[in-house]
Image (cartoon, rainbow, N blue to C red; front, side, top):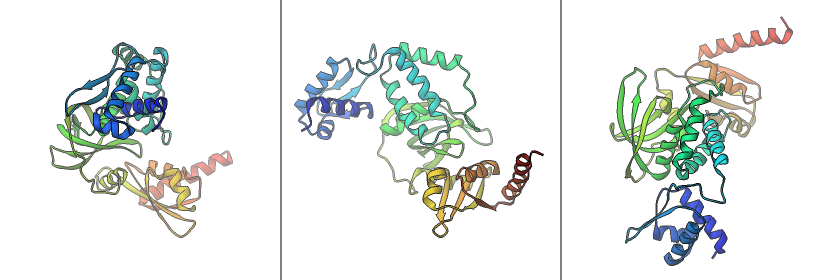
Length: 319
């Protein structure tokens, strides 16, 4: 059995990453008895962490928002700075930062008292952020709500605006958030259409959790990113840019694997297919590999690459 100190930290981490834990399940994860679990919860409360308990056969534990921030974590000023920074990072174009920022923001918001939430919202309203990258911005509150619902396997309702401007109200079982190209997508089972769907988050508003849990369904794809890319490939307002990069698959995957479908062409070449709403983004992605590449299609991407090549060559010659 782990020492009491390390077990308390593990307990706190579990409570922060799951909205509600049944008592026996939580005790099993920690490898202790339910009586020891109750003592550990009392120790967390003594440290200032607000833990709600439900008694009975179906009883369990949940970390709640408190009257003040729990000690031994961060003070008020640090919490506000952290939340503002995470909101910005969640909308950034830095590879690998968005997902981690959303998870961290979910934890901070869950235990942040209302007075600090108001300060964070005031800063958000009063601050004009600089441009991060091309593409539509997604409200961080929407990201947080949807991310928590994915984590807790809880049904959500939201308003959704389609490409033609038609607005509908949906009820869905959220599966994963995926960043593809310049946009965020929610992969979910749509209970209004009784099928899997991918939703652009910048077209999604008024997201609310319902309190109803669900048993996760099997996604009809190897992963959520693949499902989104396949959905976009058939959309009327997207194109697939295809190119061959003169670099091994591992190197190309490290650079643009999250945006492209890749397959090896021998040991030192990789074929990339990038779904986007125009050829520009596909060319940016191919260039981001840092290796020579050839654009194979469509014709609009080939023509744009030729035009850019001439202009960049003139710029390099100083003409």
